[in-house]
Image 1 (spheres, rainbow, N blue to C red):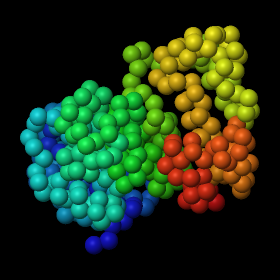
Image 2 (image 1 turned 90 degrees about the vertical axis):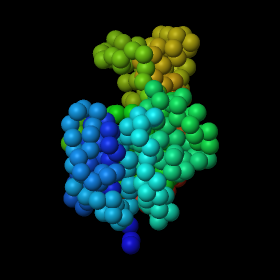
Image 3 (image 1 turned 135 degrees about the vertical axis):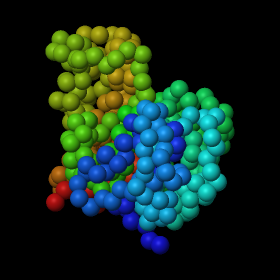
Length: 317
């Protein structure tokens, strides 16, 4: 049976967190016409959630057999009832048949138990990362990201990071227009790059004019095309030593200023690629890179495909 990339299968486990269960259906149903979301439970009948609300999924496991994306949105905590072998077999078969398989938050444990993460990078909720690494030594566990895209397998950190992962998948597979439509309806940022800390000890503050880090970020966004714009330049622009600037930037954003600056330049490159006919060298220079050779490795690392492939898939008419 053929699988459709616009059919989204959601596999809910008994005892899953309510928020994670709602993420994928909400994102894909909000993106616009053309998507079919099929939600099935690991067993028939009501499913419990951590919110104390029982859910009954409207579809059966067999209804997931045409899904081009199969998402496990959270799961019960490690140590609970084991995952049924039939569930693991179904996930393996979906992957073998070309579906993208996604584990949000503790859903990564299910994908790992199915063997789909062996030899791959993956993440899960920060609180459970030690248990995840201990239980699945064949998985390369990443502890400082919101989500990990390994092509046919995607995993995310907890709760809100599932939104980021689903929006990223929507953008990767169907282009920025649909991802932006969904993000606008959900009133969330259209894209937080996956390579940032899952959490920081202090809430991210409002950054009014006069705040050094906020001023530095605004200055950077206004001058991304300037190849001389680098971290020492930003530190000097707000009259901070490089060491103090690095420390304060990490405290505020959860990432290094260099990583943030590269992310912003790549995001700008995505926009230019999808809205203009500029060649890749010109796109690179418009975003502060010396040429396409300098842009390509950063673009591929953060987006997952080369600039030309991205343009071919996501060029806005």
